[in-house]
Length: 245
Image (cartoon, rainbow, N blue to C red; front, top):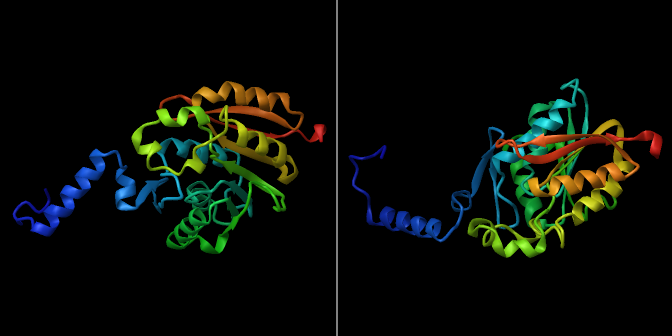
């Protein structure tokens, strides 16, 4: 449209029609172009990562809301980092913070490191392969995560662009979708600094059960709902109950 006076070459037409066919088959545009905008930043994606989604920006906002001094030398832990979008978005707003992104996928970590480098945040972001918090030493001021939360039995019913193109490992949350949260809720207290917060993304239909899990645990307090752009329950933020430890 911006070059309407220039006839399309056969090569350009062929490539264009191929892209149309791929999109018609359900492949997301972000996967075709290899990148996605998030928090005003451009993130590379890959076959081992999810595509960053606008609703996840509310998780970044919720984390920033509990930082009274944006210039503080905070430590951030991102569990299941994927593209690194949550961690790197926070580092872009917190100039003296440093962060660690953990993922079980080596391919995802390669993408996250590339994103950190392209955003000139590599000096403050470290990425390591691991199984949630195993082998990690705290304390961290913010622990953030968008873990797999789709119940295993629901995956076949997902939209084609998710079911056929997102990595299964990043989707499957176990029988009830809550397996990863159980791990995080158990392991995170030992890694959280005094006055620190945990910020978790979840699905609207899991929020009630997940909030009950948090309330039932002796380690946590200050449970707060995080709504997404459509005012649906998209996540929660809570702090450590030091008296229970």
